[in-house]
Length: 180
Ligand code: NI
Image 1 (tube, rainbow, N blue to C red):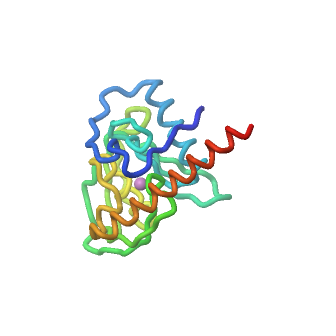
Image 2 (image 1 turned 60 degrees about the vertical axis):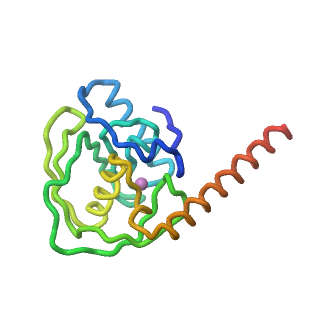
């Protein structure tokens, strides 16, 4: 398994609509495993393929806490087919928007249909953090991020902060190399 590079805003690949997965084979399973490994290492609770530069409709999710037994989901071509009437407000973050958090309105529970890594159709009704994570990750597949729920002013501010921090990190690592 290998770790993948996670793209951060304002990378244009994060704004693209992803294409359906047509074939589930060992290569695809390996990619999903790499995505999970990358997500665990980050650490995060969800990762969508476009966040690692793959414009395909697939996500990985695991909302279990550290110390609990892992429960990863690999969702291929996922689609929300049911939503609760109730809305919850939850503070979200995103590995593509590092260290920035904001409250977003989400359905309290959702039903998602997807194909698993073995090609089997699955239906899952989720609530709590899992439901929020599913909604967040699936938006990535249409080029949307949680910050798109915020006002333009707030969103632009967050993107500028991330850009600045990424630039600082790049310069710091450059420096490190020169000194070696
Ligand atoms: Ni995200």
